[in-house]
Amino acid sequence: MTEEQAVELAELRSKAQRKQQTKETNATQYQARKAAADRVVVLEELAGRGSWLRSRRWSWRSSSQRWRSGNRKRGQRTRSIARG
Image (cartoon, rainbow, N blue to C red; front, side, top):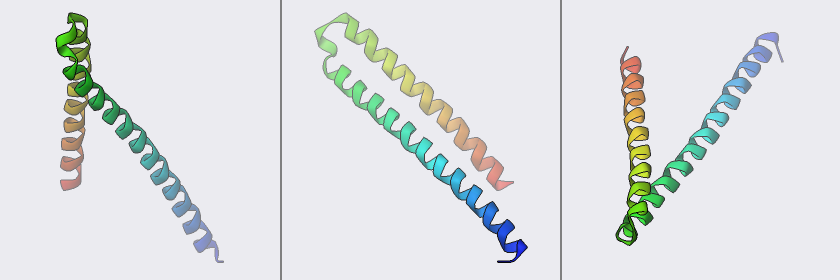
């Protein structure tokens, strides 16, 4: 293996590690969002059983709305950067 190939291999390894870490982070975030969405559905079904449920439901809903809002903004920044 030449020196150039060794340097290229080291660069590719670090890139692959970063990609794997990103995939793991995205999977964790996806699972958290899915759990929050499932919880909203359950709380909406139980909404008629008491006023405290209504307040909990709104706190979960506002959390998911904040996440969606931030995600949209991040997506817009990413697309505008990609367009150059």
